[in-house]
Length: 112
Image (tube, rainbow, N blue to C red):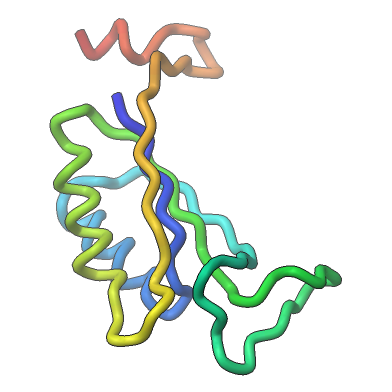
């Protein structure tokens, strides 16, 4: 399994989520945050009491089967990009296993 973490501009996240959902990726988590990086947004200022952040972001997280990861990444790139710099970044990680809280059972074992 793969975990995808994508940091997307807030104004693009609805389009990204809808495209992922339409393609069968129904389970994902969204978190609102602020970030800093190589790109500095013009006029951006933190809404929290941090002195290092410079732009709002939405972190989208989803877990999928290995063979589905590239498709999800392509969907995020296609729907998350704009003509402006600083559109975000996507991280891809391996997931060894996952467990249902209700039963304690391995999700991986059930998928094999």
